[in-house]
Structures are given as structure tokens and as C-alpha cells.
Length: 273
Image (cartoon, rainbow, N blue to C red; front, side, top):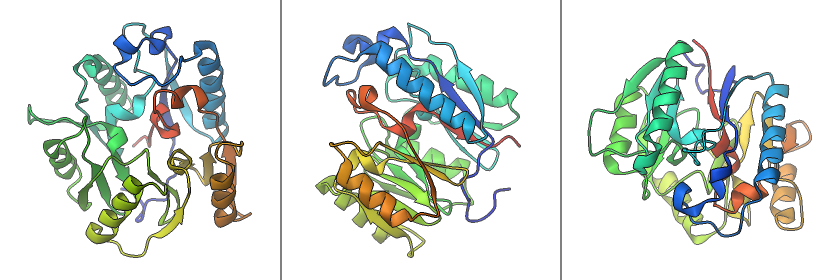
């Protein structure tokens, strides 16, 4: 069983290498704002993987499959907590093969596998935020109410609350502490979480830029975007509020941001039983 509240210490991560087909809008089915430099994306992702290993994670690295351009975004494939892996059903049908691959790996790693029974349910792992005490599930074009109910069924010991799309706007950065953006969507999301959440004492770090609010808190270290000219004010606020005693690191995400994908989307974190 997890310690309560969960302290965001993990033993393992699944990642996938970057396929060249990621730059193909017709294949990846995402809005591509700018042309992706695949070689640069691969360099950024290898640095990302190296940092995960430095944090003590056993990293399972999958080879790229050109027929699966979105496979690098492994966070969407499962929700893992307390030795249980809820296998997601992505809202994009072309991603079902990715889910099958992750199911096989997690079963091999000893996790209890839960498949979604409702044929109408859709859910992406990136729409699910676990605070260490409760789950918030964002309703989006890839996650519906039936998908949120599947999370509640898989993890009945934790409260499940529904809100807007989550991980692009909010993440956990310390015990009971959230970083959240300042856009109207983020503000509305925070209001819903404050009104509907079971726990009422979360600390909130508000950042001017939504992308800066997506961080990875792993084994005592907070990984965030670099303090460049684009997000300088937000990252300065974040690092100041976290304080000098919190270990921090920077991760590049500029190529993946071109298709609106955040830091957390590129790894699936879990603990071996």
C-alpha cells in the first residue's frame, strides 16, 4: 500500500523514443503549431531520459514505432496507483496499439491490471491528476464521464472529482502543493478543484504561464521548464516559492510544445509491487 498521503517516490518509468512520424500532422492527429525538428526533439528527449535515470528510476525505454507517432506520450496510456494499473482507452482510436504495449509491460512488472469495461468510456492518463490524497479527472475531447467513472471504479479508496482538462494547467510540486497557471481556464479549474475537492488545505503556487505549471515531482526533485525569456517570470516565482531546500532541475520541451504536449506527457511513472 502507498504511504498516505503519497510522497511521489517512484521506482520505475516507461518512456518511448521519438518517431520521425511525430512531425506528420495527419498521422499524429494533433494541432501542429510549428514544424517539429525531429532531431532536436530526440536530443531533448534523451536528456529527459538521462535525468530520470539520475533520479534513481529504472527506465524502460521502448523503441520508436513509425506507425505510432504519439507513442512518445506514454502518460496517456495508463493510470497507475498503489500497485494497480488502469489501462486507458484513448479518445483517438489509432492509439489503441500503444495501450496494448503498455498493458503487457505493466503486467510483466507485476502490477494488477484493470481494463475498462464500458465500451463508451474514453480516458487519457494526461487528464488525470493524483494529488497524493485524491484524484481529479479532467473532461476533455479525449476523456468523458464514463472514463472518469472507470478511474473511480479502479481506485475506490480515493475520492474522484471531475473538472476540466488538467495536466496542461496544473501539477503537484511538493506535498499538498500545486503549481497552476493563470489563464481563465486555469482559474476556473482551480475554482472547481477548491469547491469539489475533499482535501481543503492545498497550497497553491500561481504562475503567469500555463505551460510552466506542468512539472514533474519525482523522488524529492521538482523538474520544470528552463528559466528562459519565454517563461522566466513563472519559473522564477516557482523556484522562489519552492525554496532553496527543494532539489530542482530543468527539462527542455520546446519541440514537444509545438504540439501542445507538456513535460509530464513523456513518461509513465510507477512503483513495482
